[in-house]
Length: 365
Image 1 (tube, rainbow, N blue to C red):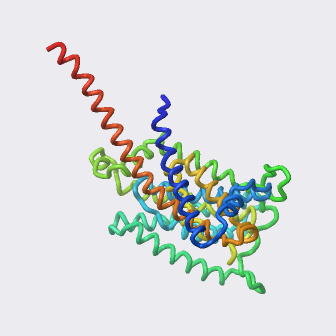
Image 2 (image 1 turned 180 degrees about the vertical axis):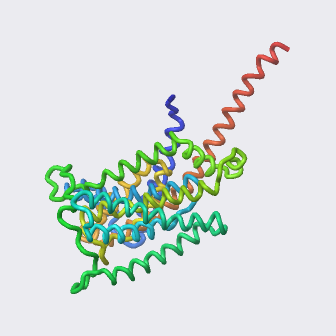
Image 3 (image 1 turned 90 degrees about the vertical axis):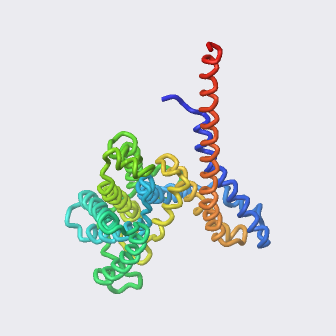
């Protein structure tokens, strides 16, 4: 394939512009509040220690999976806002199954992962079925399903939780099924999650599905123009349901690295909010598996580095949430500006080609 330098520059322009705008706006907020702007940025952009690098990679892994789950829907113009509920329900069921240890050792891990994928897919599939059978917006249904999933997890957690502890949780996963991780970073006391490989496999699956399969072509075509897809013979109703199932299945993987690599059970302290963060990462990464990887690492980097702000700069780490929010708002505007510039450039190019093709005809005449 021929490398298009202009296209590559435009692809990078929007997220870079959004980050620059976010830094400027955040600096203004800090200055107005009387906080030390220079100290804040020197703390955030300081070189992370080995332990922090591992934390960034681990956090980036779960954010990447969350963003992929959202991106599947986005590529088809579906807004799966229910990723958070899907992954929490899937993580709880997988934790319960893993704690029961119906299979030995690593087979228990594999079986629990498959259960998580199935639960996430089925929960997202409800929204897909409601959309194609009753015309219910997936935005409304997935938001409601988030609340239902949260209530179900809270209820069943109380039923199966281990007694005698303020932090109620499911039965701990057996030692034979706990994954110790990879010692990839020298001098780091902690390890990279073993199930980070799920993020790699999911990213490859996502790219191959979109670019090398008929289903992926139909998905992208439906996302760009549903009416054109219908005219081409695409079964849009089927595409909606299958896309939601795939999105939910990937959402089911989000909690697996945490469950088997760190928490070893599902309880009140199990990490939440990853589903909503994944939506932001997907937007910044332009729903592309490579772009999402960089966006996930950026979000993880900012979150990890912000932990030292209170100690070194006397500033709450909530300032990073302001920055991430501004990035999301900025990236939407930046993408629109880049899109308009690209369309104008394409129109000028076509006009120039038409003018060049007419000149020989005029000379001949």
